[in-house]
Image (tube, rainbow, N blue to C red; front, side, top):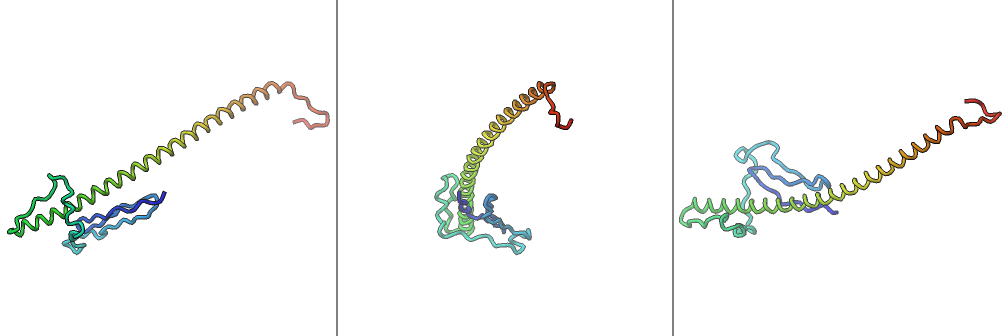
Amino acid sequence: MPPLPAPPARRRTGIVTTIRDTVSCSWIFYSNSSGSTPAEGGAPPPEPDPDLDSMHMMLDPHLRPISPDLNNEESKRIFEEHKQLAQEYLKIQTELAYLSKHKSELEEQMDDDELRQKREIIQLEKEKDSLIKLYCTLKKQCARADGDWLLAPDAPPE
């Protein structure tokens, strides 16, 4: 199975993260290792993507940002901030759906592995039982034959 494509990166106050596929190690985890915040010189907050500008309309009506008062600058700023948060929310929801799908695939694969392991255990238990029966049979034969051994005249005694 080829590795799944990486989900979109998330940006949070100077930290960019990406999920790492531990099976194929094909994704990279990035973080702001200095621990600095944007005010301390970290990455500036991302600008809204113009291609995703109307993404907020995909949200449920109760989650959509309210249209701004065009005469009020703060209202416009808050609206833009809400649109940006809506973009991030939808990206996270997409990532969550992606990871849920990947988890389901891993669970299905795990079930196949568990089934294979159970079959192997059953086969090994059957082999163990047959070896125990063989041991018991050989032990009985050995016990019966203890008194029946004949030594050849030229054979050295044990």
